[in-house]
Image (cartoon, rainbow, N blue to C red; front, side):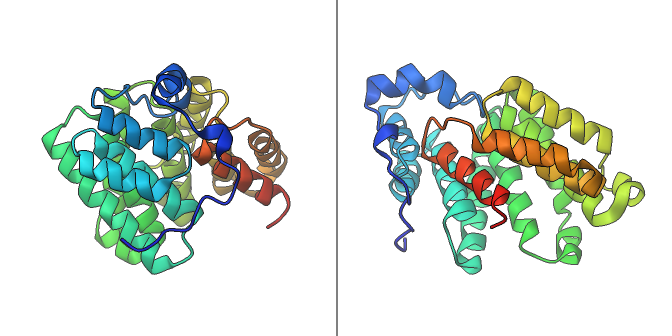
Length: 258
C-alpha cells in the first residue's frame, strides 16, 4: 500500500489506551452504532483510527478480518474524503471499500455497517464518474437500498440517516424534484433524515455539513442563511477524534470560502 498523507493536526488529544477507548466508545460511536469489538486486535485498530493513524488502522483492520472490515473501511473513507489528493487513488480506495463491504454484507448480513459503508463508498464513487455512467450502473438504487438496510438493522445509526438525507438531496440536485422521484428521491424525506441524524447525534459536525449541503441542493439560495448557520455550528463542534477534527476543519474552510 502506498504511503498515505499524514493527519495534518496535533493528534495527541485523540490517543487512547484500551481502557480510555472503551470508556469513550459510546460517544465516539454515537454516529455509527458500532458495538465495542470483542476482538482486541479490532479494538487496537480502532484506537489507531481515532488517533488519526488512518493507514495503520486500515491495515490492522483488514488483517484482523471479521469486524475489522468496518474500521478498515472507515479509515479508507476518511483518508480518501479528506486527505487524498489524487482522484485516481480516491476512486481506488472507494472501490476497495465497496469490495470489502459487499463481502462482509454477504458473510454477516446483519452487520449494519457493512451495508452503510457499501452505500457510502458507492455514493462517493458515483460522484467521481459521469451521471450517465452512474445511472447505467444503477448506483442510486444501490445506495438507497443499502442505507435503508443499515437503518433497519441499526435504527440509531446517525450517519446512515444523514447519508440517506444526502442521497435524496443529491438525486434532486441532479434530476430535479419531479424526475428525482423516479430515482426514489423525495425532498421531505431527505429533510426528515437530516433532522433525525441530528436528533440521534446532536454534537455531530458531519451531520450538520450534510444537512447544509442538502438544503442548498434541494432549495437553493433561499436556504443559504440556514446552511451557513449549520456550517457555523459544525465549525464550533468539539471533536472527539481525528476524523471528527477533519469534519470540523472542513466546516471552517467552507465558512472561509476555501
